Length: 331
Image (tube, rainbow, N blue to C red; front, top):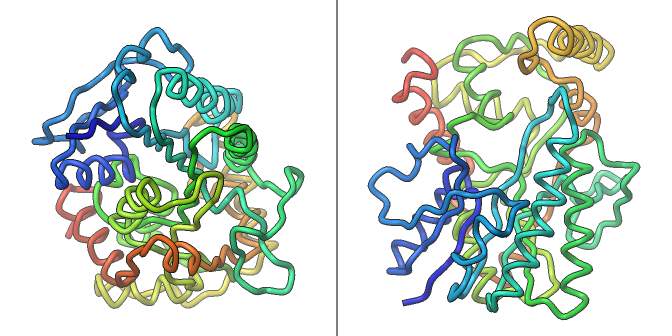
């Protein structure tokens, strides 16, 4: 029986990775923080290791004997009062745990990056693993932190470390507890808060397919390569149409001009920064990112890994059902 070490195992994507490993009869060790919510691991037979990504003393011994490290953990937010939190976790924490895993003899590392660290072609075509990107193009501290982290991870791989990189697009589905910015958008839609939409787009994929992509990357991925874990490119208008079809709630018909959206975002973010100290309902970085459609081509992962391509509509249906059943919105 193989032993796998998973960071971020209590979270949205990570808990699905854990479940897939357990279904294969594998043994799983999960790094958690003392304050972690363990609801996503309910009824999962796993070993919990309390620790901190930046403190090897808290997890080093648990890495001994592990076959694979799935480093899924990340601070994912489009708004934070202190950006240093993102860089500490996403950059320094990543380097620390991967180096310690290699020192402990872990045979394979699967690092969870994001399509946010990739470039977007200027000609409107979907981006792929080879689309060039620069740090200056990264909008938001989250994207910049993940871009810098991936650069360091790729350098380790170029030095001979057995690392495969996966770049999930926009996962949707069950167990989005926090929720993620995309999950919050779905919740807001279900609450009737979406009064308009902007001209943008996302690549959606079922979170269960993302989890399977991690396992496939460990088995079939080429060391040093990156694989986009994505599926269907949809405009925001099309996503709202599908959510309306699933939920019965009317989709917004007002196409909001960018100048209006950015103005509202500045106001909301200023209020969050100086008064509420809570995430803004319209994050400034989210609106800034919407100027480009986040469309991507996942054909490499489909071809080389066998990445599943289940229905994006069904993934949205799972998300709607999950949020409703758990009281995020009234049915």
